[in-house]
Image (cartoon, rainbow, N blue to C red; front, top):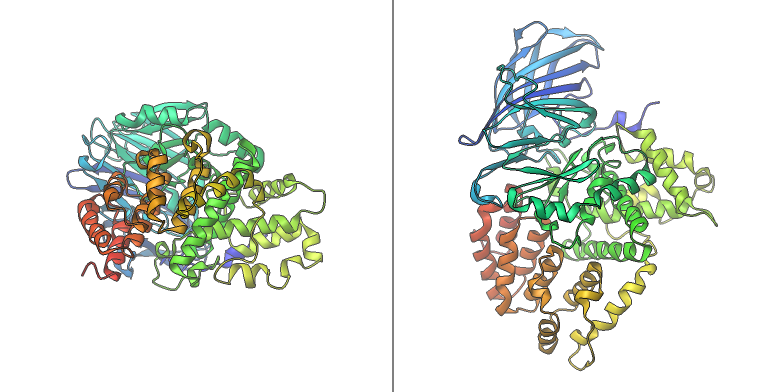
Length: 631
């Protein structure tokens, strides 16, 4: 049965993936930290989709130097050229000496060098946690792996891969693969002192990931280990031991078998710009979630849920990113509801929707607040990244469940649908219409009653294509038993007249209650001077918390209330990590603040810019330039 995604267009790739498709690739990599360079051979196995194929177009990058291209079967050197495609990539055109007929398989051998491209990140020792050895990693999502290796850099193409990695003695390589070894396979040069990886399940190219550094491994579950630098590895083990397997088993009960074998976690250096990256079998996570009290381990629930939504069933192009993230947010919260309780899940979801609301307030309801983003030629998909596909996508999946469940039916009916959806489309890439067709087939009453076309709630016209706040918000009222104590306390800090006794929130409240409390205070800021004094006196732990989500919100309160005595709390937080989710909003708040905090923003950026990921650094530069604080 053909899919709508078979006809998909992807303006973010220059590859001719409709004419020829990747089925397998093998990387032979040698890592040179002194040159900050990867020397590599790529064996790219392709299958022609038409008769007379005489040209292969691949995604590449200006930082990727192609040295030669051979056809493996004939051992012939092939003509090739590189030319610009977009700001984020270039085209590698390879001319075949013999035209291929439909169905023919052949392998291109590409010798190349990758250096400091946006998807290949080199960290000097000072930029790592232990500050003793260099570190490198790749980040493929969404269109960055073309600076790591030539490829068909579109999520609509899935392939198996393997790799040999030669790195300096004393350093360890890890990859997003379901099997690995050292010293058992020789690389192209005949050296067996290298790491070998193999991924037997077809995945989209953006999920191929590599990291090399002074990292160690400790077990945290029957199929899970945590990796990290020596100074953090035991803290990370304590953080995740005993919880990862529960997350995995709950996910399997809800969405079907976990097909990937292992689920390991790599604690990244502080400059890693994301909360987590769902690389199969090896999630890359920010060290911010290693708090010491397991209060942010739910970040891993999100990445685990990608094992079904995103990695197994994938958006076919980046305009459909909500299919990855909206379903993952929904799945994450179903796991949370099963493990914790409904009130806890509703409070966490309420925090997420508050982030979406604040995003809309900051950015307005422009085209990037649509679920289906219309990517124009040359537009970098990374520039469209925001809370919309996550939280608005979550609300749409909640609405689909709302329509599907008839009176007396419980959540298990929709859970069964999600299992069937994953089973139907696993190992494939889809667009929204593929989902809608299957949904209406699975729930015929929705189609028969035209519930999906109800005016103002139409699946395509309203949900996919309308910008701004969605027409349906899920019922999160079960969270009120946790939010009510918070809401009752807030007036004591927003009104000078209020007096009373303050609860010991550090020990009695959940983390998400504290976040809700701080969000409420931030929304009401600037606070009365007396309210600020009370906050700092009654809850001094907020100033010293190591929980990054608490620190983010405390810094926002400091900025909005111009608490000059605590500006160093902002500096310490921005120095300790480079996560985009935390760094971007703080600079957005600072440039709107007092002259003192605006000046302070420039000072902190000057101090920390070299430790930021290239993409995050460019975002902050633009914020400062738009505020006329940088030329």
